[in-house]
Amino acid sequence: MKVLITDKINEAAGKILEGTAQVDFIPTLSEDELCKKIVDYDALMVRSQTKVTKKILEAGKKLKIVGRAGVGVDNVDIESATQNGIIVVNSPDGNTNAAAEHTIAMMLAMSRNIPIAAASTKEGNWERSKFTGVEVFGKTLGIIGFGKIGSHVANVALALGMKVIVSDPYTTKEAVEKIGAKYASSLDEFWGQCDYITIHTPKTKETTYLINKNTLNRMKKGVRIINCARGGIIDEAALKEALESGQVQSAAIDVFETEPDIKASPLYGCTGNIVMTPHLGASTAEAQFNVAIDVAEQIKDVLSGGSAKAAINIPALKSSVIEPVKDYMQLAQNLGELVQQISKGNLKNINITVNGNLSELNVAPLEVAVQKGIFSSFVEGVNFVNAPLIAKNRGINVITSKSQKDCTFIGSISVTLTTDTDENTVTGAMIAENMPRIVRINDYNMSIEAEEHMLIVPHENKPSMIAKVAVVIGEHNININRMQVAQKSNKKDNVSIMIINTDRDVDSSTMKTINEIDGIKNAQYIKLNA
Image (cartoon, rainbow, N blue to C red; front, side):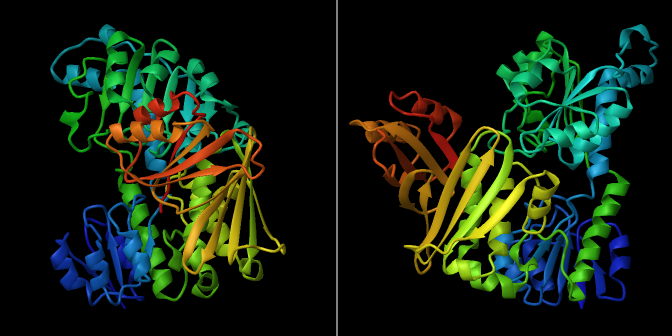
């Protein structure tokens, strides 16, 4: 066995693999250079510099596993790896402590004016009164996102004597209150209670520009904001304006929408009180050591015939179990993504029902695929291995049942998602061999392909509705690939829905215009990993 380690990865990774494989450390290579080199190796370990492309994966005829020493896997072609039977693993927990500690450090640095005070002192000045700060003790810290990093920050903040309030629709009130924090059931009640706000969510459709001019104005005057999560969650132009007006007293920002081009950020040259660092959340010696060890151990396990604990793609599951249901895996994931995006409120239960030929099979992989789809929009690093654990840790019940009723399709999957405010059901089916379709959304029957960009447009049954929507879409330079109108099965309601597949994403401005059309009832843009 041979393992190739490229990029700057801690040498401890090589020691873990000694005895299992020959390990070669080389500098970062170009795509063509790596294609020539990879043919002799069983495993590849990289950081972010190396782009593991389809060409490289296809050249690696002996490759069994690619390990990314870090959380993100944007530099690895997951689809090509899966098609070539190559496991992709990462280290989702290796930088938890580092990111949480950097958040606390940033909060304290801006509270005590440390960066500007240090710069002034180094220039030979002695300006104690000028840099009077504030204590965090007794202040309220609002945490958006209660995952591994967010919960760690909460525990440290409580130890510092802060009050903590958490906003996370995908965790339970009981889990938050268990550590001594307060749970906010909605952002409406969250904004005005916080002296400090810190963000710990992935960047998704829902969280993009979550902090904007409107939400900033709903916060306490003089609030302090920290973002060590992802660039683009904060509207940086709006934050700059709020800093300069005094609505936001100070900010500590580690991540930017224009990385690494900081000069392109509206915050560059900001005259307000702001601490900025170049995405240092995971940049500690310990974090880099931990991710190297974590991924090396997984590579060792896989090369020794075992399984990986943090696999990103399907080959980590037993092929003998996946094979009978493999044609339904993508459909199951898309159903999970769809039902989550049309639902509101705090997730409570997931009910999965299979019918037709699926009722005679082991559908455990489909259950995992549905959960991956549901959690992928709000949990960073979710994969086919950790999706069930995420559900368990968040107190979400997952129930799978097999129906023996006559099925009009070869096989079908229904997913019902129950929250504290509503319940939605979507159904997918194999309408013919290799023809998966979404066939039902709540009470509406249809037959439509799951594609990356979709619009669901409930509307009154009256003339010109389709034309009015199509005009708006066309005026925003968006192409309609296909469209279908579905009616409720009982046909008593005067409301139908358009299901529209587009060639690209539909922005919030376009959606706002569509929803302003008389007779349109809460149109939604849906993004699937189709």
